[in-house]
Image 1 (cartoon, helix red, strand yellow):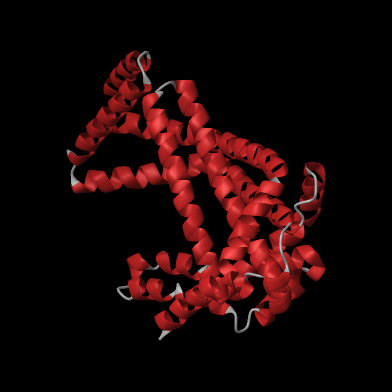
Image 2 (cartoon, one colour):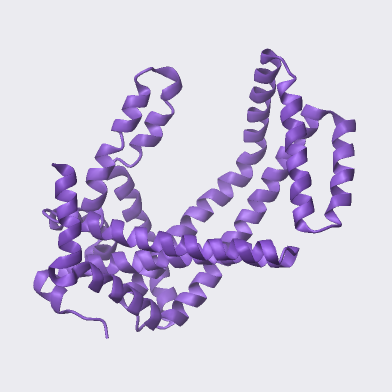
Length: 335
C-alpha cells in the first residue's frame, strides 16, 4: 500500500501539470541566473572545506603513523619511511602503490599477533588516538558543521532571491545563519533523526539492537518531510519555533509530493555528480601529477557543493511553491 502511494505520488509529480519538471527547470534556471554569486560562494566554501580537511587529515595521518610505529617497531618503521621517501621522488602512482605495500605489511604484522595482543593493541590505539585527536576534532568538526549550515543558508537565499548580488547574499546569509542553525537543531530533535545513531551504539549490548536500529529509521522517514518547509519559512520571516510548527501543519497531505520531488532531485543531482567525479578521476589517472591531483581534490569538493547547491535551490523552489498554494505554484514562472 505504501509503495502504491509512493508510486502514485511520483507519477503525479511528473505528469500532472509537469510540476516536477517545472521545478527542476526552475531550479536550474535560478542556478544559471545566480551563477556568479553561486560560483564565488562555492569556490570560497570548497576552499575552506579542503583547508579544514587537510589540517584534520594531516593530524590523523600523524596519529596513524604513530600507531604503525608501535606495531612494527622503530627499526622496521624507519626502513619503510626511507623507502617511501625514495618512492616519493617518482610519480603519484608509484607512491600509491608503495602505500598499498605498507598497508599489507601492517596487516601481516597485526595478523601475526595473538588474539590477546590484538585486543590490547586495538584498545590502546583507540584510546591514544581519541585523546590525541580530540582537540583537533573538537575544533574542526563543529567548524565544518557550521560551514555546511551557512552554505545551505547561502544557497537557500539565492534560491529565493537570485537577483541579489554576492555581497547582499553573503550579508543576508550571515544575518540569518544563527536562526537557521537553531531551526536545523530543532528539526534534528523533533524529527527523531538522532534515533539511529543512539540505537547503533546499542548493537554490541543487545541481540535485539539490530532490529531496533532498523526500526529507528521509520520515525525520521515519516517526520523529516513534514519539517522540510521550515528553513524557507524561517528565511521569509517565520521565526524559529513558528517555522517548525508551520512546516508540520502546512505539509499535511503533501507528504508523498515532498518525498517524491526531493528524491527525484536527489537522484538526478547524484547521477550528475557521479558522472563529473568519474571524469575527474579519469583526468587524475591521465595527468598523474601532484599539483593536478591537488586541484582535482579541490574540484571534487566544489562539485559536491555545487550538487548540494542545486538540491538546496530545488528545495527552496519546492517549499516556496507549496507555501504559495497550488494556483500560484502552477502559475509562477522563473524569468
